[in-house]
Length: 410
Image (cartoon, rainbow, N blue to C red; front, top):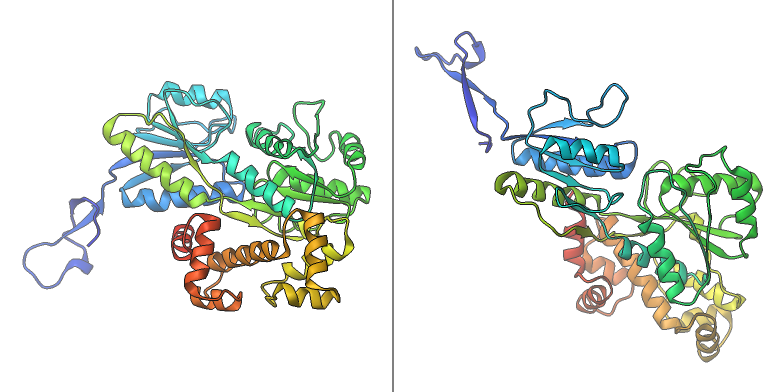
């Protein structure tokens, strides 16, 4: 029996309800508990995934949804005669913020474009952790020269790129930034300037693009200008998109966000606000899931050719998990030689690098495969399921089972 409240209406002539009883039966229709507007663009994977989760969970609260309503200028706006009780929105500009504030309704923002104000609350991706994942991924591949490409296109806050740049400089590595001379850029705008900037970057520079739109633009400019990716430059997108990233040439590595958790937290906060009238003061920041590794960063930038080859062998851990001794044997060197040159080139031991590759592969299988956790531990050469669980938790903050449950809610 569903949980919805039922409103009875006469159905005297409904043959489906006629079971031979002399008294008329009644059928029911659902009465929504709340009318909720969702003002989120659905032109990318992030927007579609967030809206999908909001509607799934909101339906359990008997919410009726108004999805992406627009005015005669095609702007996301609440209709004048709409009788609603709450709003979940991606507030990307001051005009929409002013409009929503004037409505007097409880509002949850799932963007981070504008400063948080007292009249609304927010659920958004943690930019610091996003940047940390991006820097760690690129650093593990040996990159020590970095750049940021984040033109002001109205899709993300400046903080996203600033956090990446801050973490790079904290490690005393150089980080260049593309400076746009216009308010917005596109494929045909500033093409010469973008090409000139990319060609000015040192070889083996890793470029962090704020989201899939500028990331794909970089890939297209590189292809047009004959700049090889990832041999000359690496590109990493700050957000993933099934179309823009995977159909780019080469396809683009990206930080995978936890869109489901953003939607879940937004529904929980709006439900609380509509029932209590209180606005949570603190922003809820949601950690990304992982870096989806694709061709655009699938290279190791290490000056020592032997160490670079060792890293390539280790990165194939999902196909053939090896020991450090087996890697050394493939390279026809002693384990001691490999360890000395590896630490000199990367600042860590081969065993540490191997463990990091195994755990990243384990995380991918935990999220994407139907393998049991015991099978994953065995395939990746962990001595026991308990040891695998302990190392996984130390690296990612959750046990493999908790991690799978958390990120497979959808």
